[in-house]
Length: 170
Image (cartoon, rainbow, N blue to C red; front, side):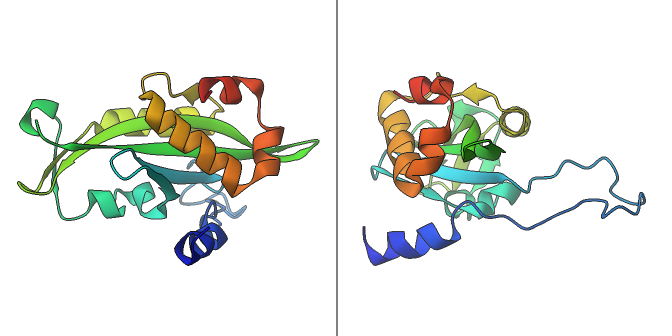
């Protein structure tokens, strides 16, 4: 593991603690807590996967300095990336990967345009929070990169994860 990967690992799968209502019952009551959600970027072009928490607010490295289009045909030469929403939960054996959903983005830096379906990202984030696994539309290389990253990041969390997740990423 390189020094960059080591430093990434220290910060990976953490997110701002955000008790939305802090018990006061005022502003923010009913807001969804993203406390256990992380965003993993899968880059099949460079054969890597990594956590980029900037994606939580559409500010990941791959999303910066491009204008997003809702129509994929406007970005015909876009490089494929996946933003994968990973939710972590805890059971009797400890923490595990509970929800995993992948969302496609296409980025063409030469024309400063990218494709992303915001409704899909919101829907998939919510599904990951609810423990759903939606990766069947991802290419095999990207699923393998994601699986290897999750295993390497924390072997115990991978071991505690459901067979459904392991099979989906097999």
